[in-house]
Image (cartoon, rainbow, N blue to C red; front, side):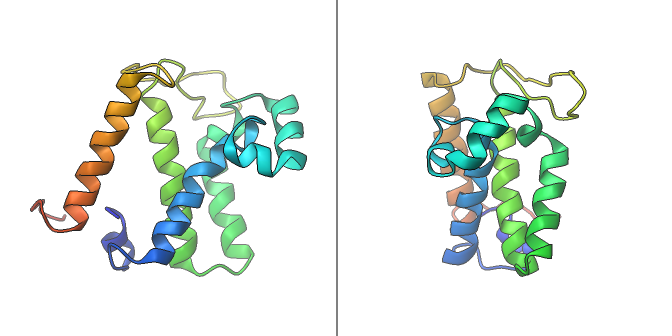
Length: 147
C-alpha cells in the first residue's frame, strides 16, 4: 500500500495488494512447516536441506533473483515490483527479530535489530502497528510528504 504510489499504482488496487501478499510469503519457502513451504514441499524440503531456514531465501541475492525471474517469466513490471516489495517487507520484519538475517548470503554475517523474538507478542504488536500505519497512510488519514 505504501509503495504503490511510488510504483505508479493506486494504493488499494487488489492485484498489487495480492502480489505483495504473495511476495511476503515467498522467503519462507525454505521452511517446510511454513504456509508456502507446506504447499510447495517439493521445493521447500530440498531448500531447507541445502541451505536451512533464513539462508539464501532471506538474502538480497534472493530479492534480485526473484525480480529477474518474475520479469523473465513475463510478469508486468508493476506486478513484479509488488511481489518484490512484499518479499522485502518479510525481510524487514525478520530483521526486527533477534535471529536476524544473512542478507549478504553466502557470507555468514547476520544482521539483526533484535527488537523482538520470532513469534512473540512484541513481534505481533510491531507488525500490527506497522500495518495500521501503512494502511492509514494509504487511505490518506496521515499526511506524510512524499519525496
